[in-house]
Length: 76
View 1 (spheres, rainbow, N blue to C red):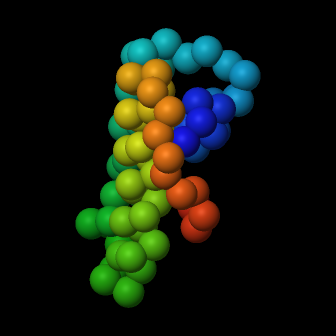
View 2: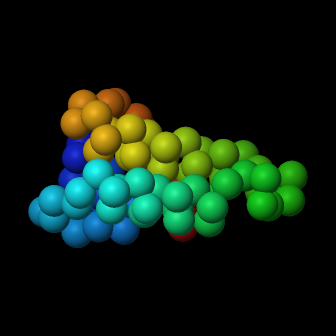
């Protein structure tokens, strides 16, 4: 995952430079919105993949490391 892509997933502009605390706050908000336990079992598969993408974006931005994570299917 590229940093720009991670920023967009967490709600930032691609060329922005959010602080660590801003990234953490955005992650918390998105994690609450996409957590699979909030949805019925019939939707759980899609929501699990969305939650994993949000988690990967957070890790990418906090560590500064590029991670290869497929982003197809994100719908929130």
